[in-house]
Length: 133
Image (cartoon, rainbow, N blue to C red; front, top):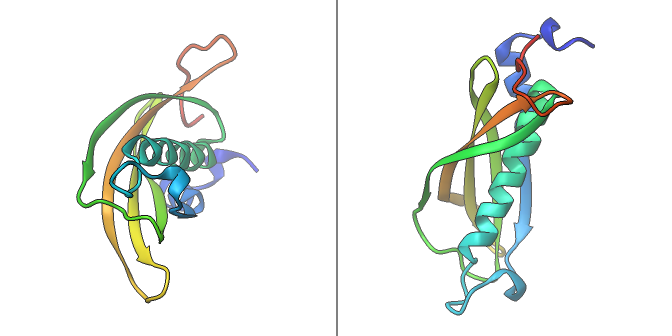
């Protein structure tokens, strides 16, 4: 089906990406909390998936905007990454990613990290191309 047959809101809803991870010692630092670089890597991956699902084009990450680490994420918890396209330009789009903490043995979750990732759509020659055609 052609991308232009859907509205922005429909494409946005179809592209929301959720990924759940368990925080184990292999992803933690010397404080026994999630290593910040690991969180950024997961966020970029979730953002890339959401952006690609939105436009179905080749994309590259061009920037991040203010990643807020609101609290440490301890080993022995779950995290849920939620990525959502929030802005679309001619050749670029921005994805907001939130990471929420969830205790393994209790209901509920709350936000611990948030940030935005900007992508540019590229053609076969790796030149910027329109996101929506």
